[in-house]
Amino acid sequence: MTGQSPPKKKTFSWRSQAFRGLLYQAITLCVIGLAVWFLAHNTVVNMRLRGIQSGFDFLTSAAGFDIGESLYPFDSGEAYWRAFLVGVSNTLRVAILGIILTTLIGTLIGVGRFSRNALVRGLCTTYIELFRNIPILLQLLMWYLMFTEVLPAATEPLIVGPFFLSKGGLNFPIPVWGAGQFWAAIGMVIGAGFAWLYRSRARKTFEQTGQLKSMFWVPVGIVIASSFGGWIAGGAPTAFNMPSQGEFAIENGGALTPEFLSVLLGLTMYTAAFVAEVVRSGIQSVPRGQGEASRALGLSQGQEMRLVMLPQALRVIIPPMTNQFLNLTKNSSLAVAIGYPDVVSIANTAINQTGRAVECIAIIMAVYLTTSLATSIMMNWYNARAAIKER
Image (tube, rainbow, N blue to C red; front, side, top):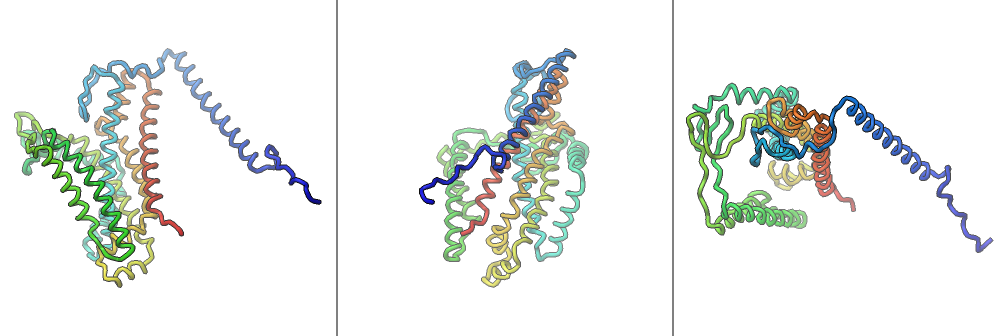
């Protein structure tokens, strides 16, 4: 029997697995949508019955309170939305610096677990077991008490060169911003681009010919030279705003408050212990034959770790490392316990003044959800680049 067309496939048939899957998903979405609508409607009705105002219109009203620490000037007469921006910027400052320091410290300690020096191995192990087994909130309180109780008063600070350390925090010199600093920053960005190109080319050369080039000092030199060139092009300014001893406090210069230092050190030291274990397990996942082959080629222990072990361990390290970055960002919400004005602290003050608890909590959830998703997206992109590509 020729010339007959094949029977048509019934797309909307209960026997179709694809159709049943789509139907179940549609039903699930409808149930979730109804549940969300019911909760939101019920909340609004109950708030209205109790005379509780709702809505985000309070964001345009004057905040009426000052913020002790801000990256940019804030006045109590400004709107709530600007106060929330200050809180978000403070949260991001801790999270970004914490992630950078955690990665550096955790990687060094994780690699140190493989040192041939017993003292180094013992110190790294002690650090990990000490900091990861003490709750993060207790560590934040410990650092805060150390800065506010152990250090001397601002009238008698510890002076190390141009740096002043006291109960008032850390004061340090900062350059007077001008054209030279602007062009130095531009030069740094350009130098970072050239350094990345150099590393990529050096890595390809090493893979193709085995010829080893500097993967650290030359890129660092490129960035420094480019920044120095921008500084020269901008007139080579040398003016600094230096801190000085005042009658009651340290004046001028830049300052880091005890609250900020406590949060940053607490989150960094705590999370770095977990990152070190992630790095250690990733390195141990590389077959031992890789290290033996590296030594047979004449590579030193540092070259073996940097060029052979760590690149192969990245595919194991990155996913759990992402989780630690997310934990650090979310743990920054505990900063409210020591008075650091992050987004949670600002929201608590706004709740006490306006009574808009649902709205303020929604803002907090949106901030942490956005930062966590952004971190996940960037780390997933890096994970895709570091993954081994099969032929």
